[in-house]
Length: 385
Image 1 (cartoon, one colour):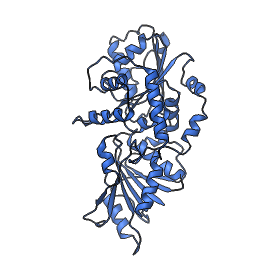
Image 2 (image 1 turned 120 degrees about the vertical axis):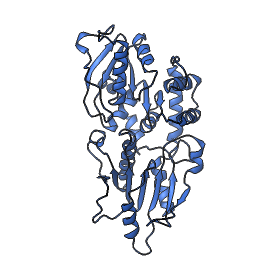
Image 3 (image 1 turned 60 degrees about the horizontal axis):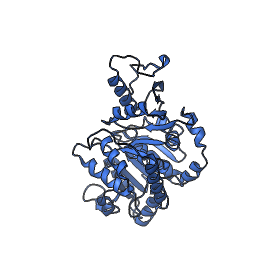
Image 4 (image 1 turned 180 degrees about the horizontal axis):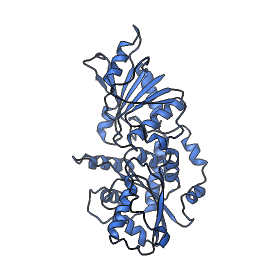
């Protein structure tokens, strides 16, 4: 079938990242996909080779529709409204008696109960050229009665075949080092985390993901050392470039490493999704944010902490608690999440990596026993056609 996926970019890592994984996975299973995005710049480093069967098109106003035949499946991601001229073309170009396109409203990922109640519900279109059509709510989720999670068919086999020691060495970690991936917004407890790692008896190699995470780390290091003096334990050839703050589209390259006592910080450049996944596989502890990297942390099966996207009305607190309940997180992990997300006062509590590792491994096993999102979505579409 032909699919048209529409994506309005709010955060280049999240919205376009999820939509690209969806498009590429559909194409890998024999579907033909057009991905319409109003800002696809991040794909230049996120998916530099593209994917067979996926065409990326600019979502402009108006859309260039000359000669275009709309797909049999329409997907509006994360509450965006498909361009009305595209809907008009879809409705006006349908042969008499042809089945209507299956119109999917792909929602945000949550473990909250309402998502399971609303998953698969219809939303009749009452007016406009598509009057009489039906949109279908599709909620990704963590349980068999939800829409599932994105997972490539060969993911488990690829993970089983990797050399984790080689991955860790490629990230600059010595065999005895703790390797930590940091992908976050601006958590209030970041300075506390860096101080803990700096003073820890175990040496830590921290990978600060480009964009807001790297900028937040640099800001935290400057706040600790505002006069610009070399931090204790830092070597003279690793002074920070004060002009190195990165913008949120992750557009610049790697910067010099920073060493502070037991903590060594690396600022890697933007990388393809597959390379980011490998960071998570190699690491002993993963700090992730948003939606896409949370799912990838679950597939990694390593201990992780989630920085949920903060909302002005505080709704993210309930969303976080619902996820921790599904995860069956131990109290140490729940408390750490609350402090990390600014939902409880600090300092950060002690971590229990063996217990967190068991929790992550159990969650991964439960999810691997379920059908993935694309598998469920293909079945859902076939049922509605």
